[in-house]
Length: 187
Image (cartoon, rainbow, N blue to C red; front, side, top):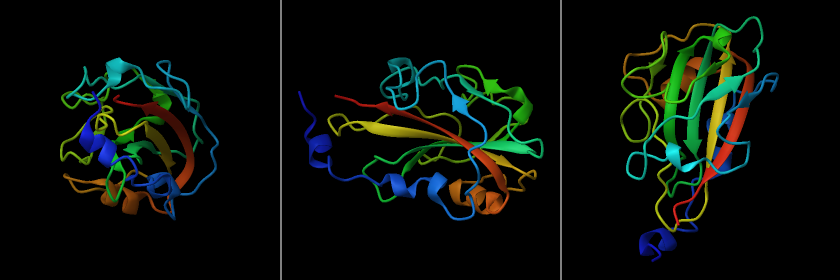
């Protein structure tokens, strides 16, 4: 049975033009790639990665090719630009990722055990770590934009940083970036 709230909000979406990828000062060549063995770019994200209200809330495995040699750290931001809000919903902010890792295994972005050196920022739900897809049922398909930024310095951030803090710290220090988009829909 369709959810009346999701159907009523169907035309209300933050917009793809508001994801961090589009922000001034964060533009850089797409000189490395981001992939996942769990889904292809533009394809549906499998159900096991759904958010905690609907599924196991596991983060998918991610892999990337070598970023530029001058990369000091990688920053991952995952956003849902189709959320019925003014700004995209932030599902993950992770900074301090070692560029030499080449990837993160499934569930590596759990809230309890971040990978060595990684620090989580506060997402839209106010907590840290991975928050899988949780669109309002019957709202239609949502995009999940995985954005990986290579920065040329270690970011100095407050202990309780959020999206705007990381955007300010990265501004004019992004030397390369990679992107992977997936979709998810709650019928």
